Length: 428
Image (cartoon, rainbow, N blue to C red; front, side):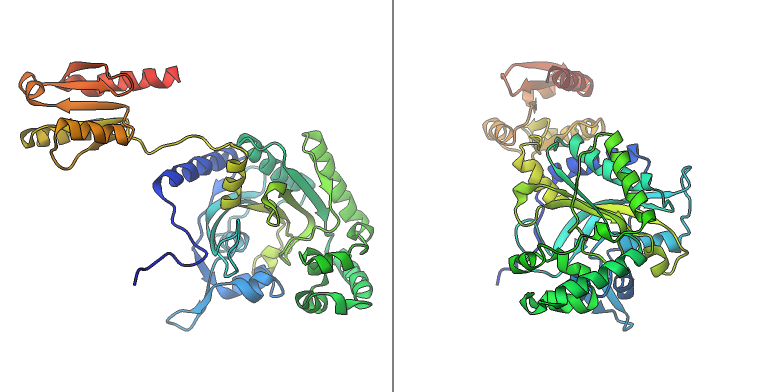
């Protein structure tokens, strides 16, 4: 029986991998410009990290985590998101105030895992990138992570996305709002979906996040959390908005925005691409001032965001913003006799060490056959070593675009090709 890729996962083939590498380099470049250092955490962690960090009432912890026992009987989980592992590493390695700003600024990029029904833009193994600022409680940090996300998307050519913004207040504000939600929803809770009926008892704010049309209709006139946040939280949120106004980041206040994790406090935000349909958010984040303490560290403020790489690539493709990249080599080396193969292999190595993409046929074939191969794979140049070239210690360099060619001394080939390729880059 043929073995296939597990449901909800996919293979990334060479041409697509070039596009992923291009986007990843853009991400790293923008993040480093803002002063963030890259962190790489294990793909699996102790299960309790996510139970404590994400929240046991969330859909992720209740339904979606890949959890198993190792040989020692310890419960481990493939990471479903990136923030909790970063916080764990921050605590474990005492990364307090590792930048000159008095805060620790980190970014990550890698695979995550959730056991959910695969659909457009959603996979069981998916890839996320994100940033975290740990140790800064001021509203400028909130504004920075939002501005950073917007700047990244603009760098990639996405200028028409929507920023949705809200404040969940502090635990005291949320407690008051929670009570107001319970009183409002309990009057007609039978109309809610079964998931929301469970949420109503454990975390009523999550009802606002439900995508069920009936639940959305029943909660259409629900009280706004903006009416319940305290003066301090209101001042924090107002200052975040002023910072965003100062740098020209447009946003809209969305009082229903709560995000899916229990750890958020004060500012929350999402960046929306309406073209993606139901799964329209390509980025989301906010402030989580109690998470470090919840995970066993000292009281430490935090704020950050996460974005899905697959959804970002889908958006870039929809907008026509992906570059035309190809695995086509710059040079295809043609050898017409086994006698020349050792020396030809040495020439190929010299070109590769100079950074010139070079392909060599592993078997000696006719000139016609090898030229057909060079044309098929899109090589820019072919180097031909035949009897005449071998006797004269030269190599024929043929430009595939117009079939012009010249003979060059063997030792001069890397230098001549280097100049030719540099000239091609300047021209285009």
